[in-house]
Image 1 (tube, rainbow, N blue to C red):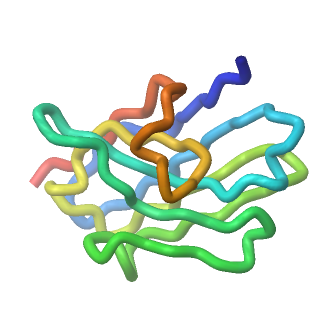
Image 2 (cartoon, helix red, strand yellow):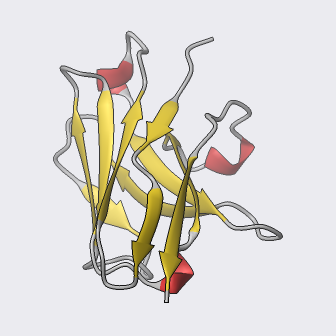
Length: 119
């Protein structure tokens, strides 16, 4: 089973920026819509952003719209999340995965990358 590998998290002050990366060495990567998701302890995983297979359309949760930007490089099987204007409430473990309307039922997830925003 192909593993998703997220990286780029860390500790940052409020107002700062981070860029998350996700490697997905799946041969059909360029045909998949992809998404970023996040989870905090005691809460359900939530949608953050998604990008269609060819990169031409993106979608964002209201909570991150205008601050986060999702992008992808199909030649490298990579998805990115540029996070600017970080807030304390953005603190979470961030995961990438394919995006479908049934993403909550996806059974295979990577280890995620921890983002901590100090206020």
